Image (tube, rainbow, N blue to C red):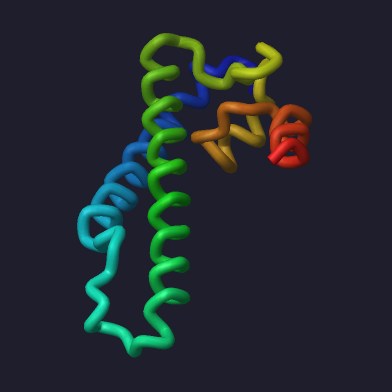
Length: 111
């Protein structure tokens, strides 16, 4: 399958479902935890994990929104760095992907 339009009906519901799940999670889990809920020694480590989870969730939500917008514009599945098509298998497995594998690997090395 090489026509990205054929993948949209498969991937769009996945994106919308994940968007709803992440939005609900973010809304139901405060970014800053009440200090009294944790022992003094544990608070910082629990807060660091919570902050990390929030960042990961917000980043993923941003990628999902970008993917949904890209679908609407007919440009979903094109790498935002090199402009090459993202392989169908990658899009089916990770429909919010906005980088091809080589660009994603380069991006990870540069962080």
